[in-house]
Length: 240
Image 1 (tube, helix red, strand yellow):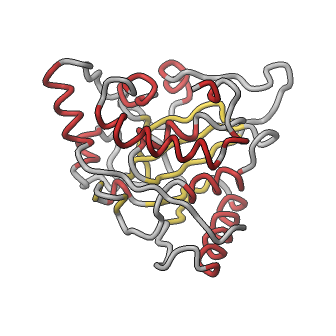
Image 2 (cartoon, rainbow, N blue to C red):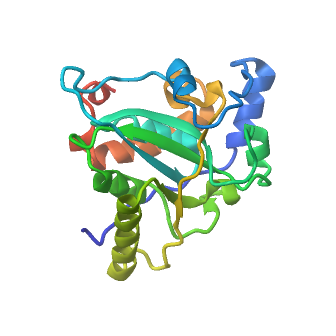
C-alpha cells in the first residue's frame, strides 16, 4: 500500500449554485422519493448498467460517505465492475429525509453513495482504495469548505468482512503516516439507505456543462481521479 495518498477537497458555493439554478429555472426540483432502501425505486429512477449480462453473478453493495455526493457519484460510476452508484443519505435518525433537512445538519445523516458492484471485476478492497484516495479523511465533519456532519467521512459496512477490511485499511493508513493528521473516518454498521431526490442522480452527467459548481469543483476532481485510476475506468467512460 503506497504511503503517498492523494486527496481532493471541495469548495464552497454548492448550495449557492443550487439555489441560483432554482431561481433562474435551469432545472426543476422534483419531489423527494420519500422511501428507504427500496430496490424497485432505485431501479426505476437510476440508470442500471448491466455487467457481464451473459454471465450470472452475485452483486454486492458498498456504502461510502466522503463529502458532496455529486462528486463521489461521478467518480464511482466510472469504475469497471460498478453497475450503479446512487446518491443518498444514511447514518442518521430521521426517516425519509429531504435534502434540505440533511443540509440543516439535524438529521444525523451523511450524504453518501450506495454502490452496486461485481466482485469478480472490482473488489471491495479496490473500492476502499478509491474511497480513501479521493477525499481527505482527516477533517472531522468537513470536506474542504463543505462543513457539517452531512459531509463526514464514513464507511457503512454491510457485513463483518467489509468491517474488517475497512478497519484494517484505516489502521494501515494511520500507521503509514500517509497524512500528518489522524484519519477520522467513521466505520459504522449500515442500517438504511434513503435515495436522494431524483435531481441529484447523475448530477454531473446532466449538469456538467452548465452548472458552475460542476465545472469548477467536480471537473478538476474528476480529472485527477481519471489520471490516478485510468486502468480501472470503464471503456465507455474513457471516451470522456
